[in-house]
Length: 349
Image: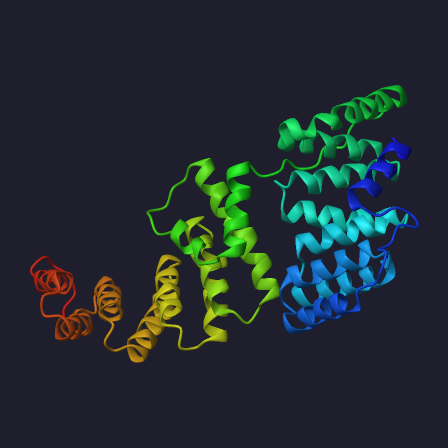
């Protein structure tokens, strides 16, 4: 498989030995470099610069530009993919495979990412790995992958003759989950919508939540000072029943932004679920101090204190809620429940 795969990789990259642009466009290069400098966290700017330099035959500068992009824009799948192809064209298959594997891991439903990984693995003599990647690429590519069938059969024949077996990587996420992962990576707020309904325990729903979490984990690694990312991770962990992880993520959001009231209320709910009422109460009171006009902060505190039998303090919280909205039925029901508690043998004020 070595020779065909090497040739295919060169064709995919669009670079042939000795092939360069007829005339170097210095203005184009300057514009691309300026854009990459002005938008350092945007992967597309670095990818376009690297691709343009590669087509111009300036491969060492293309590699440098893409590596700079990885450092500034984080682990972009497209940067890893292009850098892998350039390294493969230069014959550095070991490095190329590392980058192409990263690209395929981050965007597991990209047919071209898996196809190119398979070709480079074949060029490197990693026949077993190449056959497995070809198998996955063909499953994604449909008719577009028809030309890969013969290469997979060739690899399977070589494995059979040597007595080896194809390497089996962990199965890629279902297409739906992979799509969710890509959507959340582009718009992290989508993750909150996934947990806006009562918890579901079905396999498909859990896989969707895990896909969203994978995207948020990558984003949080790239932007560790964004509290919303940790807040989203906390919501998903709660939905998956991982309360300790949810608490950790909520506390990270609060460490970054101590005035994040939504994170305060989330942490209070999580601590309550984990059987830590003192911590839950502390976060509830903190939320009520930060946003005294938010009725939810007083209702949550009233419920929490009522469950502890602290009826007097609970009643005070419900009354504060009624001061904000005199028509709040939840607060009225809370007061009625507290009033009936002594007659039922409950705790006093």
